[in-house]
Amino acid sequence: MRGSLKLFTWFGIPVHLHWTFGLIFLYALWVGHANELDWIGTIWLMGFFIALFTCVLLHEYGHSLTARRYGVETRDIILTPIGGIARLEKMPEKPMQEFLVAIAGPMVNVVIAALLFGLSMLIFDGERWELFKWFLRDQLLLSGGEDAGDVMEESGIALSGILFYLPVLVATNIALVVFNLIPAFPMDGGRILRALLATRMKSLPATRAAVYLGRVMAVLVGILGIFI
Image 1 (cartoon, helix red, strand yellow):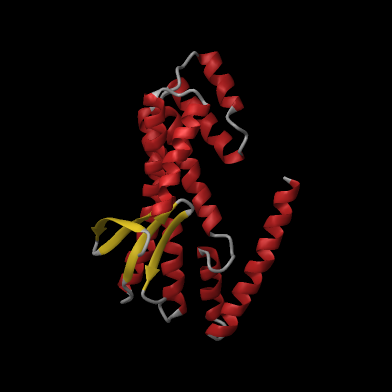
Image 2 (tube, rainbow, N blue to C red):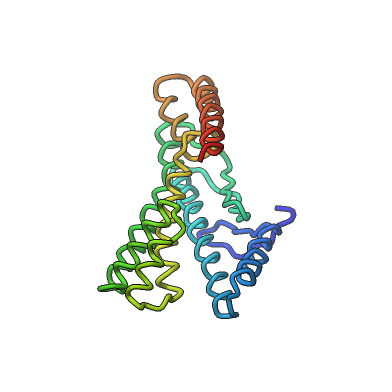
């Protein structure tokens, strides 16, 4: 794709990095400077973004490899600052095949979140495990980590990169699942909705219904954003 850099080919699918992805690393440098992080802290922050977009890439491979099972190949996968794009040659014609292709991506994030949570249970114990749970809850509730900070102050535990970023990655993968399952076409949730509707009606009316519901959902989300 024009304006992108080919990183590698995995499972026969080229992976490209869009030129705007460099903004992510500039953002990491800015955040590091704004929070007075040293170089080690800034490197941890960049590592977090790399880990995050690895999860996004695996999400797209979930779509691509599931589509391959039904004879649909993927031209390439493009990573951008706002997410990944798996450019399938076409969508499967059968509704249940489209359903499985669409839901495969979010299910990859479910597996990643479960594995990271299990890993955290193994490597953290005692007060560190309690602190992990505080961070995870605060990330899921978008409360800014204030309660976790209180626990750290009371316990005297020093903040480490892995202790902070593991719960953030778990919460982020959960957020990716929830966000992608919003029934707004052409997101995963919209495609899932269209596939389910297509089991009861023809493809074109199902697409129109999914697009209409997606617009309604966009308006509702916009209104919700105003009052939150």
